[in-house]
Image (cartoon, rainbow, N blue to C red; front, side):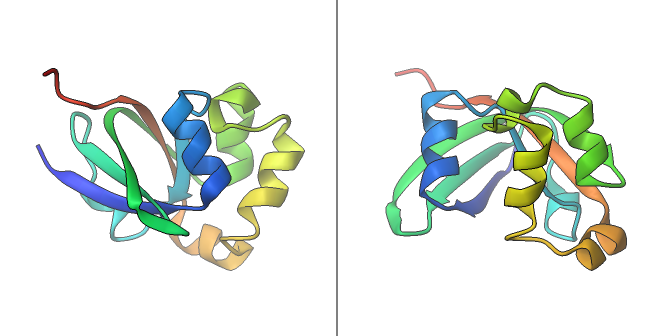
Length: 116
């Protein structure tokens, strides 16, 4: 089992920490090729890297586009209100060119803290 690190801005971080967001969407770039079901992801808050939350990878969903990924699950799983809002938000981070080049992945997560 491997622990990966990913950075998140405040709002997505808080939604993951509270359990409101259960699927993290990313490009399926070289870094994401390493993620396996059962691994852990340590999410770090970009504006306060000392704040972190560890989640366990429950499932991986590969898609050609964010639109396809967002269409197959309720928007609330991604911490959003609608598919349109999610697409608008993801464009702040990833371009259409990057999406076409790499494809995308949805990472289903759950609380990954070890007991005790």
